[in-house]
Length: 115
Image (tube, rainbow, N blue to C red; front, side, top):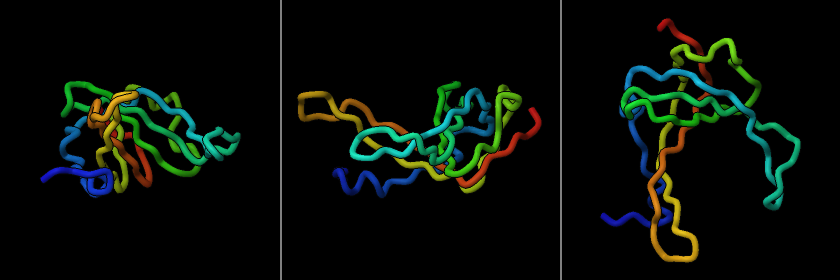
């Protein structure tokens, strides 16, 4: 099966792929954009975790709304509520071809767990 721009959005990835240990290492706001320009409106927060299933690679998980965790939660294990994963391609600038396939993630909530 060949994926197209439309069908790649339909691919979902199991959260189990990330591994059992997601360690929080960063939190930052994400903003609303209007006509390609960033506004001052914060839509939610991006939680960066390292993934044991990907040899410690980092993944950003977007959660809309208010900030749920801060710097005090860094280096603790995180558990996400309703974690959804998908893929998206990036393209080689000025050429016709895919440069990479990337993971995107969103969730409804996050908490710190022991570890």
